[in-house]
Amino acid sequence: MLVLGLAAGSGAVQGPVLGLLDKDLDAHHVMLHRSSVGAGRVFVRVSDVGEAAAPEQAARLAASRLVEAGVRGRRAVVVVVPTGSGWVNRNAIEGFERQLGSGVATVAVQYDRSPSWLSLLAERDVSEASARAVVDAVAARIDELPAGERPALYVYGESLGALAGQAALADHARAAHVCGSLWSGVPGGGRLGIARERALANADDPIVHLVPGTATHRPLRWAGAVWLPWVSYGGAAVDTLSSLAPGDGHGHRYGPEQDWTLPTCSTPVAAGARHTG
Image 1 (spheres, helix red, strand yellow):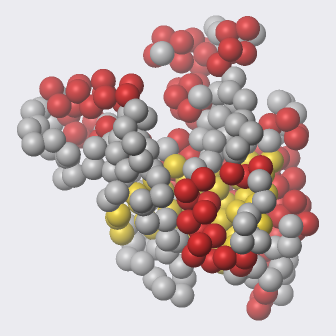
Image 2 (image 1 turned 45 degrees about the vertical axis):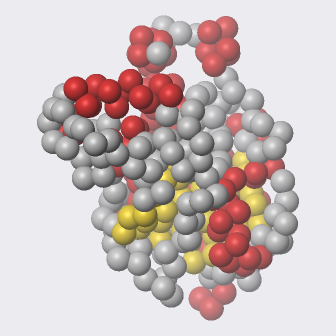
């Protein structure tokens, strides 16, 4: 995987090989179906804009579709940053809709068709550029509405999507437009420390623990009874290969048992608040 990823980053892997790594969107993809509660769902696929389209072009299309879906009158808009293949966690979307009902609209843009591990190794800049462009385009459309009719803006991302979302909100001017953010399964477990930020992390998710510091220092939320310098870190690295094997609530799987509540502006949540699944 590592060799293939490095080769892809250098341009050595082309054509048929990368074609085999492309992942088609599942027919049951949550963003391709109407909400049962009347909430808005907007999704832009790679095929909607073409493989060579700039992130800004896809973001503008998403913002236009959001207006068509009726952004005016909504209480909230959630920019959802998907994983590398365009996958979005159904549990998260349904959680937002339970919280806000028909008053919420979610919008996501597919920036790649490769598995997340390959996107992370070869094209992480693409995911970050997409996240920045979508947040900017949606914020601009919201600002066009009368002051009393502007929905609150949120950003949500899982795994690679969380890293890209955090990169977008690392800019303080951009973050100022956002009411709150929610991350799940952040690789390395990092947070920005901005207001109304929540992070979901399963205690036994090895991907959350893979940061250089945990090679020599026991992580605060280490799930195992025993921790050994370097040895435990190496074990966590190996465990990433089976991190999706456990059921929901374990490993790198975040399911309906999680608290998907958005930290709203009307109900402030302390910066960096953390929920453990």
